[in-house]
Length: 462
Image (tube, rainbow, N blue to C red; front, side, top):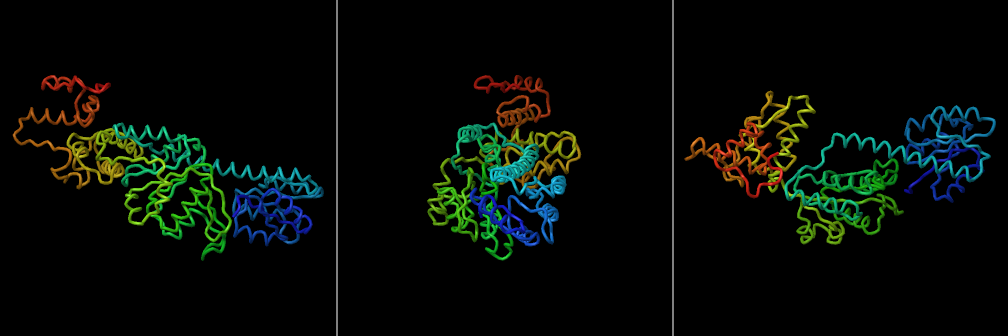
């Protein structure tokens, strides 16, 4: 399954053989057909990068071939061959969507240059289409969010490794944002203008996953009616993200090892290796070291993948990020759904802060989206949150304030200090959560004699 395949449609045997030899010397794979009908059958079953067709042929002529090819795959360039007598028809064909016309008397260099240009234009159109899709996705796509010490270390590591081509293995629980980290690395890398392709290895059965990753050749299995490029080929010049790589079978692990060692793949049913040019980023929520010890995952592949490990902490270990995540999701979903701006009541915020979030950021996002949809007012209250948050056991890692043996002033003081601690003593944010003005917060702190001075973070009064 070579990189560039050309389909030549020509009823004159001499011209067919001439083009096959000329273009074959340029390392293209050339398939020749003597009729338009035969060519279309091949085109329906196989991948071609360029079609060259004579304009005047018995039966189906070149214009009909052009129309049929464009219906099947509008992106494939079609070059019309013509003699002097049919120049007018050739120009008409270009107006109908042909890439160019080619005089049969053209010099060899002219033929080679035209074919090369057709392939380059096809690749540029394909990349342009992909980049437009990526741009649309990025406009609505969030970047990973966090200001806690643990997340700052993750961001620092991303900046250090982004410009390299080293393989990266991201560790993290489900919902921590492993793909967002991979996209961040890609966007800061030298491959940022190339595609970012991702696949969840645990979401597909083995046979389908193998075909998706490496491609297949026609007839390699039932239903393989034409050659298909794998995602490693699609990701050429960019980044390939393998999520849940620990779910791959031993057979696929062998093929992945070949990609990392030899930088080449062999399609399912194929025999000829194809070189690949991708930066590989893998991710897992499993303990791969344990899987290696138990023989479930190849040790050699593990060490090839684990060149630069990045560990994403679960949300329960970076609770300082919850306030900014809450603020971000509230703004995002209120804007998306045309809802008025909403705030979170102190009681609801307390629930959000002390819940352990086993589903991590994704679970927090879902809980807030649900609350925004169901809550008609301007403030999200405890009853707007899922039951599992409201029934959090008192033994949670973050202490719960109770009214037992506390006066009203003492209870207010304790809750105010709790919110300040959870927001890193960011007084403007704490005041918003408490539902009071910043000046009122300052007065209360002075009143209770607990205005933080020593060790207060820079900018905490913002």
